[in-house]
Length: 306
Image 1 (spheres, rainbow, N blue to C red):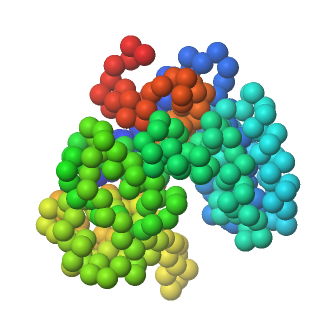
Image 2: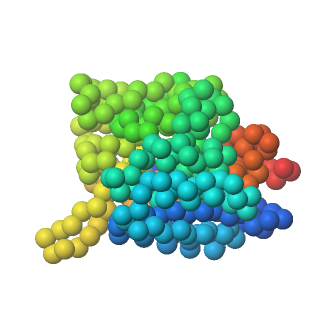
């Protein structure tokens, strides 16, 4: 049976550290959370962020815009948050309506307050190996590998998915010259030729393609570690809603060396990483000079002589 890489113990470790750190701040950590109405699933995530903020001791200020709001209206709110010294982090809840310019919105966020790390400046820093805020989901994958002591140096990591949110930044994070990176990375997608042959060669397979059950048993090797990033909604004949990953879990769980569940895996950790980014924004990434590797060492290994 495969080792189950549950997200809860990882998230609990991160949250315990954050709660302790937030209590030591002279000024409360404050996140400006901006949501454009219209997507029911977004409201669930927004309320979850607010609840987590209360538990951890951070302030989450929600700004809600109507569905027909313009890009300019959103940009004005971002500008106000950028220039407000009491706001340490800015989070735009996606998806945004199709009529909004997502690239312009992401580029408008102050990189030092960009706790979802979607500003092109932060994306460029990740590619160049410059210390910066890192996207929440790729960092959650990175944290999972660290917590469960899954080696990456010299290992072949195959990532199925080339999105700006997961695939591309994760590939660059794992390519860095660092103790917990230094991987050989292959970025694949649904149109890659010889997809199965390439995924079977992977020591670590990250599924981030956004298709339920896309990764099947014949796509993995017996020593493959599977990290399932996907969260796909399914509705059965009786109208019951459930969530599954990009991996056919039942088929792969007996063959893979280790596997993350959905739900209860990467998504659980991602919400904790958002607040870790808020803490990093409060401290000032360049001023504090701690990398994400440094913070994960503090959290998982311990050494609170900070």
